[in-house]
Amino acid sequence: MSHPPYLPFLLVWALPVLAVQWLAGGRYLWRERRRWSWIVLVLGVYFTLADAIAIAAGIWSFDHGQLLGVYLGNVPIEETLFYLLTAAMVVQGFTIAWAAWDDRAQLAARWRRRLGRVRALPRHSSASTPTREPAQTASMTDA
Amino acid sequence: MTYAAFLALFLLAPLLVLALVLRGRLLRRRYLLLALALTAIALAYMAPWDHLAAVWGLWTWAPGRTWGIRLWAIPPEEYLFCLLEALLATTLTYTAFVWRRARREKEPVR
Image 1 (cartoon, chains in turn yellow, brown):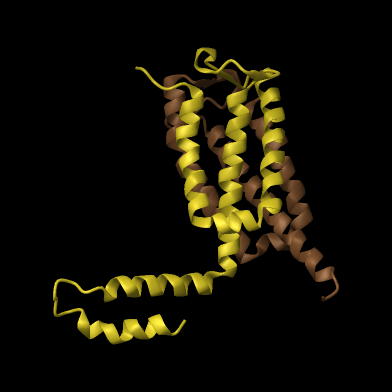
Image 2 (cartoon, rainbow over the protein chains, first blue to last red):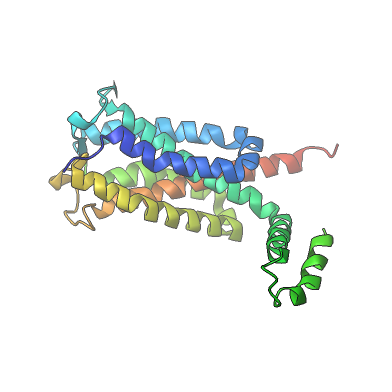
C-alpha cells in the first residue's frame, strides 16, 4: 500500500492542531510567549538526546527510505521535529487553558452574548422565538 | 536497554524530580484537571497516527526491547511514552506558572 513518508505524515497530523490553537488562543500564546517557548525548545533538545540513546540501544528504528536523509548524529531530523511539535501542542494547550481559566467568567459571558445574538435573529416569521427575546436582550445588555 | 528502562530513566525520573519540587502544589485542582484532560487528548490523538505509521513500517520496535504485547500495532510502552511526555510537558509548564506567581508575590507592590 502506498503511504506518505514520515515528514508529510507528521506535518499533516500536527500543524492543524497548532493552527487551531493559535486561532483560538493566539492572544494568550503571544502574551505568554516567554513563559512557554523555552519549554518547547528544552523538551525538543532533551528528547532528541534521549532518542539518540534509544536508537543506539536498538529500541526503535526507522525505514530510512521514508526519511529526508538529514540526521543529527543518529537521530533523523523528523524525530527532532516530532518532539518539538508534540511538546508545542501540549505546552500551548496547557498555556491557553491555564490563561482562559483566569478569564472564564468573561469568556462565559461573551459566549452567552454570542448565543443570545444568534437566538435573537429573526427566524422566518416563526411564532416561537419572540417569547424568548426579553430574556435574551436582557443578557445582551448586562455586560 | 529495554523500552521500559528508557521510560523510567528519561521520563519517570524527571517527573519524580518535578514532583519533589512541586510537592503539595501538584494537588491543585486547576493543574490536575488540565494535566489529566491534555494527557487524555494526547493519547487519543496519538494512537491512530502512531498505529498507521507502525502498519506502514515508518518505524518499528525491536522485539527483544519491548514487552512483546501490541495494542493495535503499538506496544504499550509507546502509550506510556505519550502519557508521560504529555505529563512532563504540562508539569513543566505548570512549574513555570507557579514560579512566576511566587516571584510576583515576592516583589514589592508598585
